[in-house]
Image (cartoon, rainbow, N blue to C red; front, side):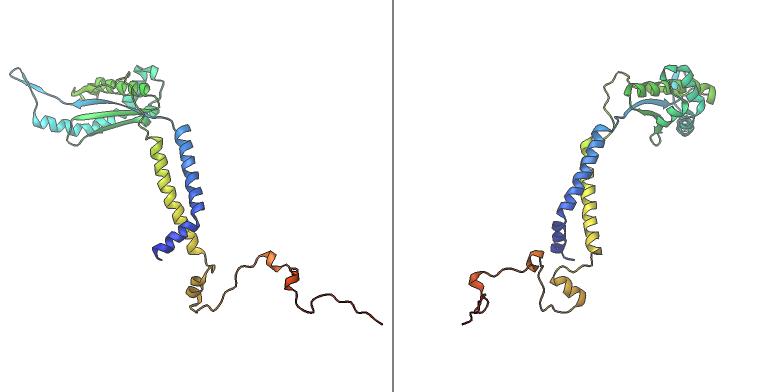
Length: 249
């Protein structure tokens, strides 16, 4: 199929394509502006590090550092365990959340070969997210010596509860542009699909493709008005078409 035929096909269904795109963008705009709840993220950083004294000077052993890095995988699981989360609930009742609710919004990550852990909490309220992440960080730091029998966790930074945070949701404009592109592609694909399954003959080219025979003539479209008998005007009447009267003597 040539490019001209494709463009002609799109032009014939341009109204359908436009309607599809307008409806899709309109629905996405309504959802984005009226029904999308803003989501905020708060984070705290912890470092897993342990040093020892040599002649009164604090030093860090390479093997100890590697051990700390390997411990981070275990620490991730411990942070999200019921032992820590239940302690968070008991120490911070003002959070008014269950351990499962905190676990569902909690994320613990770390970079490869890094001793730093990042604790993140997402919530519809930034202040609430910051309070939860700070509570988890402090409880974990205080409980890890009794759990692992080693005190090697330090809080690098807390979440700023009073910070002016912005939602992490994407802009509604982004979703509307994405909706426009996707709906345009889908509608054009739907038009091509309709044409592919359409076996009706519309023009001379369709006849040639279907029967592979030349077309000698064709009948134009006949309207209902063309089937009604028409009265001949006086100028169109022929000799003998008039009405005559016979007279007797």
